[in-house]
Length: 105
Length: 176
Image 1: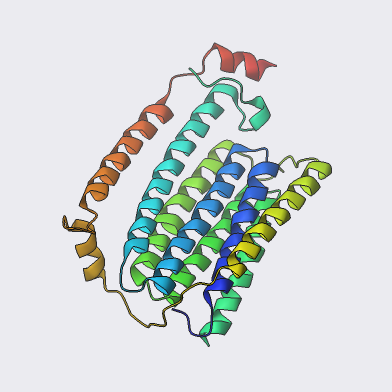
Image 2: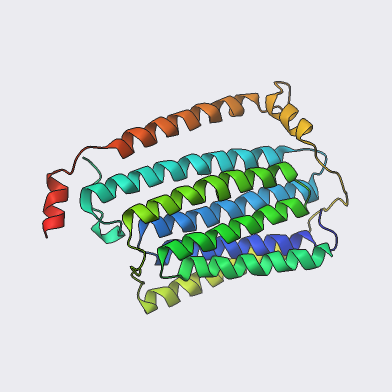
């Protein structure tokens, strides 16, 4: 654990990052920008897993395993999302949400 | 010392996260996201999970950010500025997010966490044994499932991104 830093401060930090991500997800109108916001949300939740593992249950490692799994799923999700976005751009020459009307080719 | 480092990292992360969701240049917002992710790796280093910090740096900073920069460069002009949402919508969203943050923080601060003072450090050996053990508390099954998931995602990404030539819809759209 971090000397002199309580769990409350770290959870405050991750909550702030989470809601910045939510704000970005709602206000952005561009697919890649929305993907960036999703990354922020996922990352702040991963830090929560790790911090609670370290501060409350230091003798087990479950939080670390779940963090690794979340990172792996997030990486897969990003790769697929970017593939879909590039394919969509090839179809309609735009990545704005309001132009996105077709999902099949 | 650690406290000061933590606060520096926290300020950097919050500032760059706000910059990342509000910047009007797409490439810049990706680069700001990179700083947030590196700050998170710094927090993992501070709480002594070196393995996770290394994963964070290689997978996120090394992989995902590069992928995003590639896609931004493929589909955008660098100079192009993003559309912004209406000011009214922004204000409403900010208020809702603040309310949600308030609820989160009141819940967190009213919960008595049972913190155990410790300075255990974790070795990669323990993490690897935890992943590959099939006894109680082992993670061998999710570990194998996640490898199949990664393979499926890779094949899916290739199939989707290979695509076909511009179809009728695309041509009609670009002519408009």
